[in-house]
Image 1 (cartoon, helix red, strand yellow):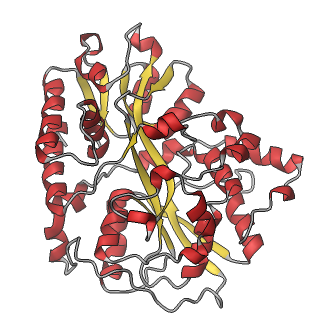
Image 2 (tube, rainbow, N blue to C red):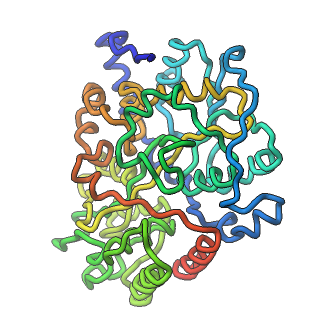
Image 3 (cartoon, rainbow, N blue to C red):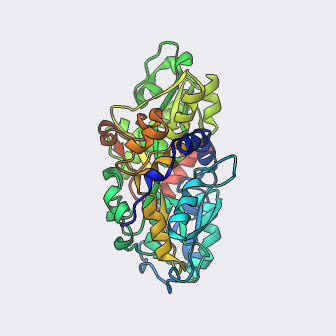
Length: 415
């Protein structure tokens, strides 16, 4: 079993690494690019859009298709990721954790930041995957709903546990068995994304905020409340507040959540539904409180003493961006070795310190403390047991549900 080399960094090097990591503002950039939930062109088109292109509808996938593995002869791995979703040494314009992987293994990582939106990227690779062709990528990073779709379509490969000892041992319990990939046969999380309630203490002016009900029902917050334009986040948090489990809700539950939000819209309680642009409204105080992404809140808190967050007693929503190996990838073993590398505590800690999302790796806290003690103690990055227990996932939707739900949500938000 390969081990990270923690004693290879001198105190001077460790200090330099810390300065580089703490200079990042990656979370704001990452989430500002993620506009599409399961909505947009893909969801509204639904199964019909897939079938029209000669693609089998989800649920009838035939399993991943491998190709000849060239890993032994070609010491490379092609990795496609979102922009600003990797640690960077700003002074040298390089990625320290990737560089260390290459020095250890001899495998060169051809790293590309070419994923700007789930639906957009799906459209880019769909023709090749549907035709059973190599996409030119060994690793891709997709949000859970789209990862599940590709698994159902049979367009990603099953992972070899023998190449993933650290990943298997160190994956946090809360991420181990999503309904769209039970047992993580095809995917491992890159990062977790938590949806919480953020607020501006000055703008609240003494109003107590601890639940979605407070956002929707307190007249003192009228016109100063924000919800997210991503369906799963806003509906999921509302369902939890109503005592419903986002992993097991019915059509009637969904309609009740829509009706509750619609009432708040009609009464002027909700100012607007936003993407990442809620961050400026919250900092300025135009929004007193809103549904927010934890990665943003970490950065906002660092820059503004008035911004803080709360986890409702009813719980919060967690999604994941996930590492997958597409069909016909040329370097599957190399890709699995890179996935496994990021489940070792030191590389995972360096990544978490830079991008500030939920780290899915158990045992990372001690390493993160060496880089940034505040980050290590932040439950938005390293959830404690109480916070992990409040985490809920939005269930996998059928194509029919996806289409119907997104249409209703679009009507609600005016999209």
